[in-house]
Length: 105
Image 1 (spheres, rainbow, N blue to C red):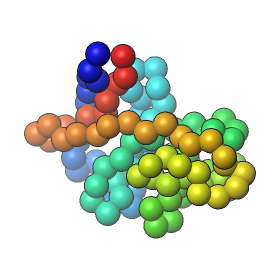
Image 2: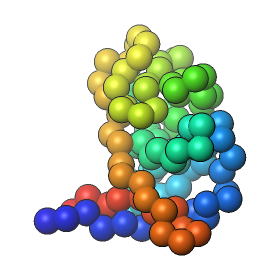
Image 3: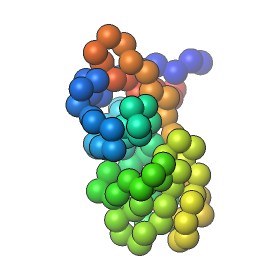
């Protein structure tokens, strides 16, 4: 079964280096503009249930605001302790002026 996409924002909503919380179906998602490319990761830290969209971006990584765990924005892979479990990533596409994030079946 293929993914379907849901519109969550407009292209101009995020400047490079900015992020925002969106919901994709039931999933909390952090939408990130990293140097002009858009990425979507699950908004919930895998170490503790903190919102990553309340964290900070440093280079190509996002730091959790609760305990300072770090994830790679592009891959979702852990980049600094105490995070050891990757965060889920989602496909992102642009359709006209709409930013869309993939919803898994």
